[in-house]
Image 1 (tube, rainbow, N blue to C red):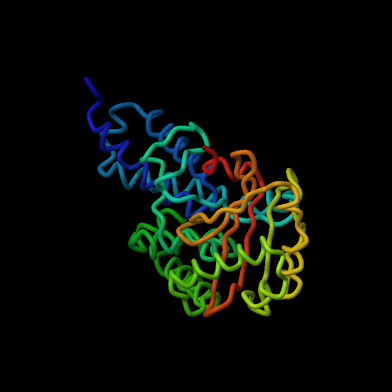
Image 2: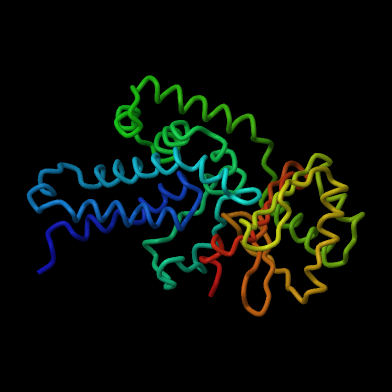
Length: 298
């Protein structure tokens, strides 16, 4: 006979994965947080579990607090990270696999929406831990401020201010969204120009203030500093030995947006995300750290 309430408890797994990924920008870390959350639940006695009036709220509170602790310690970890740190990219929901199990599990999938596109996650990563948690819990997952306050350890009024500060950061980084079809077209044109080593064509697709960032994590080769400016970014991509080394460039969805991947012998080596404003590419993020690409490998 199954444990009473087991299905209800386990049904929260996807919600917790979605929450933890947005809070941490790492699917592997999100899976670890959810595993730890359930470990704490099952470490309790049946009587202790039955005493919890709202198990789903308890799970969310515990997962959020674990994430908050991780965010607070992330600064020290980032200082040791080699090169630039970019959030882990996610493939289309229908095609990914979890990093830990290697088997497709719908309960592990992150719902892809505007709150997980790469530009949004990069802005989130610049926030303080308290700002990020207050904003994600309230603005994305619609938790009331009194509940957010209990998790963050601040007053509801303070959490309201944190979320407001986070919103300003988001607004300051926002620009008029390009239509999805135009985004896809720009990425396709970028791919063609890159494959043709057509620097002039690349420059026409790039905003003059474009920034390109690569993340190799010290494990694989990647530029340690961002590259700025349309001409310099175009030259940088044209000089990469991708095609001379027999790599294949493919169009794929990255965090819900049109992107590219570099593949060799069936293995995805690089995932590239783009941000677009108007009719130009404004940001390019190339994730090469293999520890961040597990969900992309078939």
